[in-house]
Length: 281
Length: 247
Ligand SMILES: Nc1ncnc2c1ncn2[C@@H]1O[C@H](COP(=O)(O)OP(=O)(O)O)[C@@H](O)[C@H]1O
Ligand SMILES: [Mg+2]
Image 1 (cartoon, rainbow over the protein chains, first blue to last red):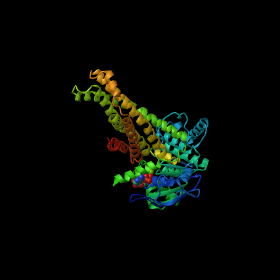
Image 2 (cartoon, rainbow over the protein chains, first blue to last red; image 1 turned 30 degrees about the vertical axis):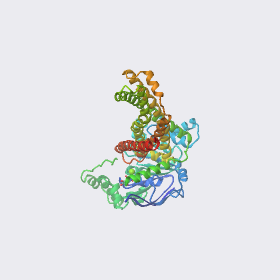
Image 3 (cartoon, chains in turn green, orange; image 1 turned 120 degrees about the vertical axis):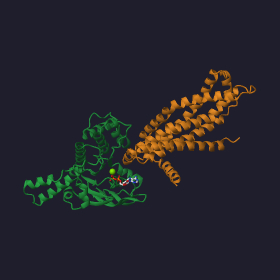
Image 4 (cartoon, rainbow over the protein chains, first blue to last red; image 1 turned 180 degrees about the horizontal axis):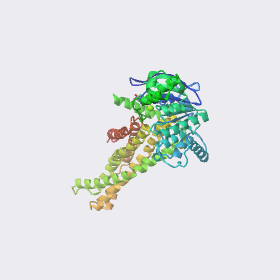
């Protein structure tokens, strides 16, 4: 379990995270959602200590990470795996060497044992026969999977994923989302995912934290998110008119107001639905 | 003033470099890798430059020594001393600032921008120690070695040029090399080589490690690393000469 208490972060005189608290439980996917620039990455980096927060605390299983010495932090970090937005694979190393790197650094295992573990996690992320390839030879989806493999190779208790499906097509995104969800359940990991992809929210979101301009605007689960009355949240998740219409319909249906199909057709045809392509960075 | 905060951050970076390696073998591997990159990677250009510098020195010295009163072997002495005192350490290090320095800056800059440095930090690795220290130690080992090679090749280049242009015979050149030889000059050159090696590697590491932004900034950072280290090298050259070359 990770507890975030009143985290604050400023860069110069620009406040990026104002005051955010959250509780993220083990064995589930905890999502941080919000528009680009709302502070998701900065919040995540404050949680793992890549940024020093200006105020507040982060607790890992009750231990105050922010108050720890560097040596103590290193111990916690060995239990953290992270998938970065651009995968952050070491370009000068092969896939196998990338995944073996944490093992070589932190274990005294034999080469054979390390290699077995590498192949085990590669199989887990459904990548076989890529051992000798370099990151530059991989597709975006494959890089993400190698990134996940490297993040879980030391059996972390906490997994952080920053925009795991940015730059991926919807189908590949789904594969990655499901993989994250399965791994989370399988190893009872506390997983934290940054995303602005609503498909992911629906696919894997157990707990959802909605960030708006550096503040926690809303939190809840994925059932609550659909029927939330929060205007900013609604503007974000139902950004396209099509989805907005679909939602209105669902609400009406829910309230038992739609009785005949004619009504539904009318609603769907109300000016051409605009399918806004997902915002890719 | 940004220059003072830069110097402060630079000193903090140097201080942050000294921590216990998480795993000695991995650090050793990285050190050997950097030795190859810096040493072998720059050997070719260093060899070419030093041979030509030596050759040009011989021809120019001969050209300036028009009076027959001075023995020809003096040419060899002058070439030897200018190569050892100035050309081999300073000129080679200026070139190395461009070759090895920009490589260090862009390697670290790329790792920063693509979050590879963050990925290492998350694993619990002190990236200043793991990424910067091996580069600086490798530079401190390889650059003085390259400077010594440059001395030998420069003097050899001078001989080749002198003989092939009919300026001086090989025997007289060799005899001249041994006349009035001051071993202290070699010591002075090595002191310069160590100081410049530290400047090249640490300044480049500083600009690379703290890159912010994207690909464009990596290019800017490595250019800046080269410019700043060249200026600092020339300044240090002046200071060291003033301190160590008192008559
Ligand atoms: N290192 C930094 N220095 C200054 N400002 C930053 C830094 N990192 C992020 N920011 C700013 O913080 C805000 C939130 O960024 P970020 O967390 O990356 O957003 P996102 O929600 O898209 O991940 C942005 O306005 C960004 O410009
Ligand atoms: Mg982000």
